[in-house]
Length: 110
Length: 115
Image (cartoon, rainbow over all chains, first blue to last red; front, side):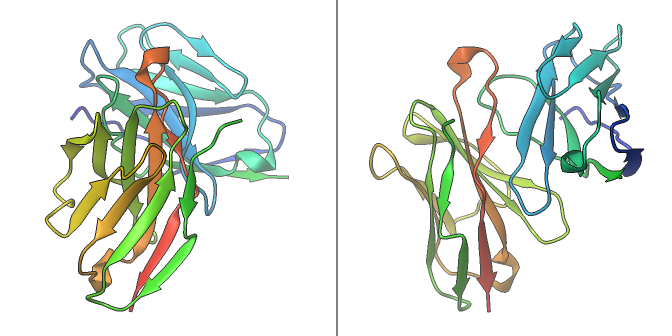
């Protein structure tokens, strides 16, 4: 499986933007980049995914480097509720398992 | 909004006992999954299920584990003879690839405690 590298932890102030980086230098051409998050004491939750182009949804934006070897999840205005572990996951096809790493633990302070 | 539900929320059992964890996936989803998370560790894939058979499984999913979709709504994980190291949160998930995104929707989990 292609691997991803994320910082162990990051900290942000409430209402400020947060940029969560992910390196995936061994990504293959068919790998989608998925982001999930896990709030404390909850199951993982889908955030966003993309293949080549930048993506936006109501939760976040995903910026994908032109060579696809890295990506950045952007939370435009962090709230206390965004404090969670964020996972960057590469996934080749539909119906395949998600291979969770350790993710980035995001702390949001008031 | 449709959601995945799991029962029970917490199961306590004695080592060697059989347990069945239950999940109700989102109704029109076609793929079903079980994951587990030992306290303080990462989420680990156990098994995926599609078209009434296992489509993928991890090394963790040995002969002690089995999955079943006994009717049109439930998806179960059975552990035949529990061990202390089976203590973990077990998450069920489901997905529908036909929409293009194949987002996996997770349930709230069942905390299994083996004594």
